Length: 403
Image 1 (cartoon, rainbow, N blue to C red):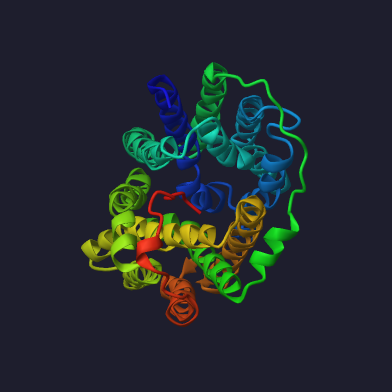
Image 2 (image 1 turned 60 degrees about the vertical axis):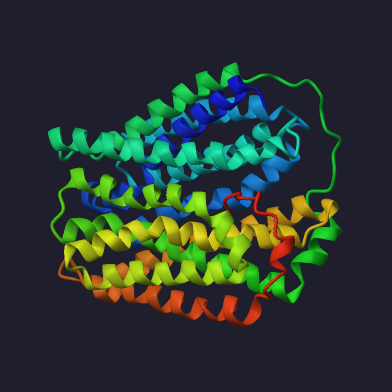
């Protein structure tokens, strides 16, 4: 892979995650405190992002490089996504926000898989090892925007709406930047979206449990993002501190990506997955108590390790069961079940629980955080009893691809 292409992909990752990183951490706070939507309405709106997980696998496998090149589709999605987020930033009606966020999610959702297609197109197996390095730039972009808004919200503490405007502008810039991608002319012949070989893999008992594990992990992660910003504000942190505090998880994710492959090689998949769950449980217990502050900070920092340690081994383990013919379909079905259903359930459950835990406008966050603690504790059953420890000598640590 040429250096110029690496630089373009790295910049793309930075811009893409800067855009979404400006919105995700504070969206629930914006909807609840500034648009005054109910907890359940907020959960429904945020859950719309999950719909993209159902649609994007179909888009990327059926349209990209068959009807239109991945590069062109990526560019079109960025321009339309920028426009939809721009309209969303100035919308305050529930149904208007609901429709626009759904539309934005449907348009932008496929672009994350499209980046992968662009990276791996024409890359050799050796060159594909660059993926982990390139993906880290996305995390760096998330951290940059978090600290940038620390200074902005220090000057204008009530302008949370500016995070949506920033997302729109950054997405537009990325659309123009993507015009510099090298174009490829060939088209790929149509194939079945979900081949029968993939179904044979998915119905294996161990894969069913692995997908259930991914579903529960995504549910808890979305639940966390729903409640994190309002929680931090409730314990006394001003708006300007929210995104930097939540970016602690992205800082640790960078560190985790550097060591996860080595840990998998040394200890195997299931040990690393269990370690991720332990860190997730630590984070949630820290939020449950809410003090001392250093305990909360440590919990937030653990988020990146937890995320990497249970998602990376899961995706590598899933891939290890796939033949060439089954791989695409298996990953499509996995995305639909884990990210699609998991994210949808996480947002809806978080909205319902927060409504239940709210009395006279005050949220009892111990009740709120108890639910993901229980779900995470139950999740330990899967890697402990239902995930086999594969031969460490056959582990491919190069496939450090996020879920």
